[in-house]
Image (cartoon, rainbow, N blue to C red; front, side, top):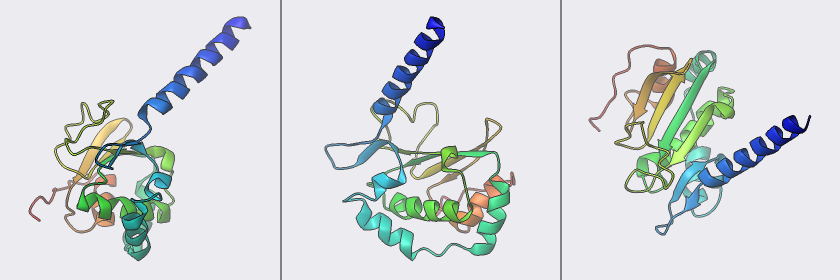
Length: 174
């Protein structure tokens, strides 16, 4: 019994430390860097662009309806930046799309990067992040596709293509 109590206590301490270590911080440039959640974007100065872009966005309902079925067992790792004009558009749009699709937000991790596209904890390591925003989709632990920087069609249609396991051609020409 003592061993179980000790094990549980150590697990709690390690989890608490890990959460504190990776929580987003505001760097000297005023950018958020680290793991973020929607409430982080609802604080100033980020709320200025987040709220406006969230409220004004009208996702394609047909695509969102189809996306809802395809997102089962999908996890997403999103590398974004509060200094990037494309991220300032895609972060709130992604939240709105995924909320309308009934997505479980425990299955997405938003990581904000500094201007060097890194974090102090190297959360971007091993993900080959060259541009932001980058959304990496996983199914059964395997990467099934990436949305990088610009949409081919629009955000929800591109997410649907990737989540459906279809071949996705990244648009890098805009």
